[in-house]
Length: 420
Image 1 (cartoon, rainbow, N blue to C red):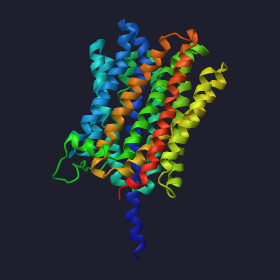
Image 2 (image 1 turned 90 degrees about the horizontal axis):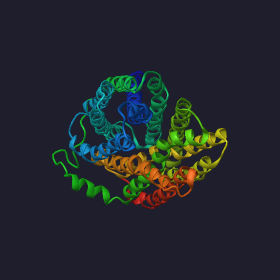
Image 3 (image 1 turned 120 degrees about the vertical axis):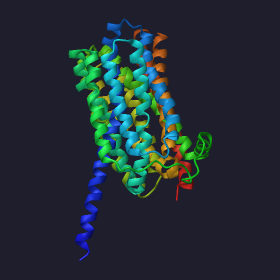
Image 4 (image 1 turned 90 degrees about the vertical axis):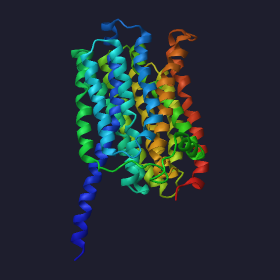
């Protein structure tokens, strides 16, 4: 007689979790969606406003700096507030600021909007990880992380594909203005899909740890420390590649911007989404037998991806080069789901949102800030003449291997630091 009652209870719970995962997945897309919009708009925006290359670069850099600063400070400041209001409000703000960017013809105003978007979207990952920890058991973490991580490349697909087409046909202002629609819709979805729970305040509900105390506690966890180093280093290679691939494909394969957008939507978007999903399923299976599986998948993925990327940069055939880039992406994008699985395993629940904030600050500062700049700086030395960009991308890609070393070091410590 109890069976029917149990079924009626479990179905709403399962339905809520599915809706929650869908909401968090769409939220994960917001960050990279906004990054692709500016990458597509930089050309026509710069021409209309007569911007120098430095001013164009600053529109990318200010996003990275604001994101990094917010990732370090905001997760600690929002402790105790409603997760639903925090994350839906942050996503809504990115939409409003995108709309204001489209309505403005002032460089300073657009620059400030980009900084505001970077700060707002920095909230998403910490709140997402806190929500996962409270709603899903650890043994199902890898699959859930894979699904949510797949949202990031989807943001690339939409940004480069749909809104890239709008920008090219109707102009950068229309592109910015229409890009407000998606975040606002996602904000509404998040508001209704998330429970009205509050973010944890610290080790005890009545004892709020200081920023430096929280940071000190995290830094003592050797597994976390090495995973952050590794995650940041692969960010250098990955972000350096993603931001420079449009120029690489146009310069060496003579493709137009629309074709490049479609190709990158397929490589980074579809390929990255598939990689994240495969990573989640593979992680679930391996971690059942050995919790070091997440670190082995991360290290193995980037080790295999490194030579594939380098070969792609030098192969003259466009079809073969694009195919190699797609295959490299399939292996290289396996890291994010596994990184967050490890974080959930070795960091206590009250510190997880803050731990994610620290990690994302390093990843964005090193990747979007450092990686993109490093590729450009090496290329501008012109040591290899007209081939400098090929060599520059290849050199920066080697940081994948440096990151893999830290993932393997994390595997050495993780068993002794697992949270009970």
